[in-house]
Length: 237
Image (tube, rainbow, N blue to C red):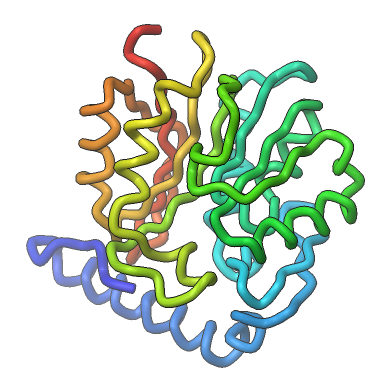
């Protein structure tokens, strides 16, 4: 993970960020690495989750929990149509299912689809969720959604395996931006989480080029990385 501070930042800020980055690195190596790419049972945001080895672990990386926190920024009701793209363990979809009865969870990773189905049963929301394998919107019908959740791969590159799909892609954010306006209701929006360690400005430009209004919902400063949750709405709203 790279340091997001610019070379023009004060020396003390750059040193603090470097030390924090090193601390997080060694914490992961010493205390958490055995839970990465391994079968594990996590509790995230009060939800018990089985994590299969090929699936991103939201117990180790907090972006999934932060996206769940951001659900309070949107109005959801029992009849809201919600889509969780790149659902992984199903955390976002399961959280939304505490309110809405119409949840679709999709992932390109077949292991994630299986994992999300297990966790929907474990958390007793399987009757509210449709879980399927799909590359973004490609495998979905023409349903329009009141809310779309997306925790995208932050980094550029070709994924090496199924787990790596959670970390890197060459074009997934751009394709998401192009397709999103065609899958939102007239009052719909998307919540998307991005990292300052990635091509955040490039991703935001893709959203705006697709006719989306972009606003900040939450921002979390982790010293060596800033995590921001953006709300995307059709410019026609």
